[in-house]
Length: 410
Image 1 (spheres, rainbow, N blue to C red):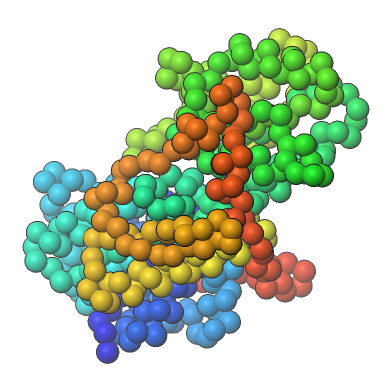
Image 2 (image 1 turned 90 degrees about the vertical axis):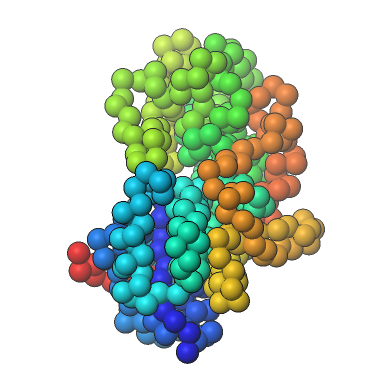
């Protein structure tokens, strides 16, 4: 019998993060883990000794299937930044006292960039005090901005949703036969992977968005207005996809030109919102046409009704691979996805040192953005398209998707 396992989820939720959780749980139990605990609200909840025994909530294979298909973070999440070890060692001592109390031998954390920073620090502290606890990172983020890994679980399903909804927005814009501009705002602070996915809507039955603006290029408002005016000479409905994080030449986010108050989280990230509304207002004032601002917002994160089968399968695989590696003695690593081929699509898992991943942001390559800076290239689409393939239908009850849920005692 193995020792006890603990697993947590951190950062923004996705449509498939619970598939990774299910992969960790099932693989740990199959490999002889005694108890598998779940942190409630990540490392922040663990510090408050909030956790559950997952075996008391996951009773059979149907529960595991429901968990795989349940969107958002089953265990709850957090955005909590651990201090540097030399700045506040007491927090680390507190965490390890709790882990020792629970007789934890294996620690798994499912998350993105900031979450991998947490795992790295805990692994470093374990080495400092000669703790035998093994720490592993399980990748997750719709933003697809984790370094080294080819892509991240969560991105494929979000891209599938964005491509699908963009097609529907384009259809809707053609209804009334009058001049209009629709600005779609898509998540992405410094990396435009999600915004670029709007180009997936361009196919034989849809012309796709007219322009796409990523944060990897400086945004020029005057040039943008002129391009819209040019498009309107030949089109009634113009649709533009913009990243929430597009910036001006002086470094300001476009959304900061609004009067909106922007909240700042524990990692110093400013909440970005209002980019599409600001640009729509500018166009109304300058051109005088009808405009609409549409924020996909949190809808793009957890749309499990249109989940990518490739994505949900890989999310399960990285969870299981993390457990296998930890049980074989690895620590301080993150599971990465390595693409073997595009056609047919093949991808394997490998391990990578968290010191080479944490706090390093992967952005869209400049060569995957057109020279004019207002669209993505065919190479971008070749990269994304395999990740959105096939579907996993939700388990439907009374006409609606059934999710796995527990009543939080806190």
